Amino acid sequence: MTLEIDVRYLLDRLAIQDLIAKYGMGQDLHQADDDQDVLQQWLEIFAPDAVLDASAVGGPAAMTLQEYAELLRGPNLDGQKGMPVHFDAWQHREGYATVTIEGDTATAVSPFLHLHEARDGGSNLVHAGMWRDTLKRLPQGWRISHRRLQDLFFNTFARVENPKVI
Image 1: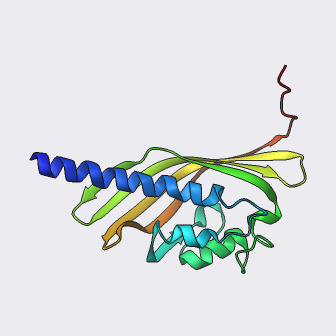
Image 2: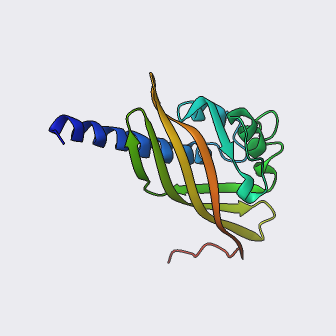
């Protein structure tokens, strides 16, 4: 490999890893009672014709980005339905991806850990899994064109008070 090819690979890999991290930030910057539109941020991550597969957790196997956002945030993306009905707050930790790049297409596998605090105050949900992504290079840069969720486990835990600092 030449230095130019190596540098191109590193720049592409970093751009792809940033996209995966931005997905989680898109979720986390738009908490349950926040009226901001998560779809706005996700348009910087997903291709316009992206397909999302949530069949591993009982969702549809082929959703558009709009349908996915509505599943999570409700039909008006306002949090009145979807996940915000059940959860007060959440954090999405997107792990480092293993990336394979072939020209203007790429695949990435990345672990995730998603944490959710239940609105009823009684429990917290921990969801671990993997994202299996196919990406393509567009004029705007890399975008996820297909995302499949691979479920590893869901667990709920009783909520305890935050420790007091002495």
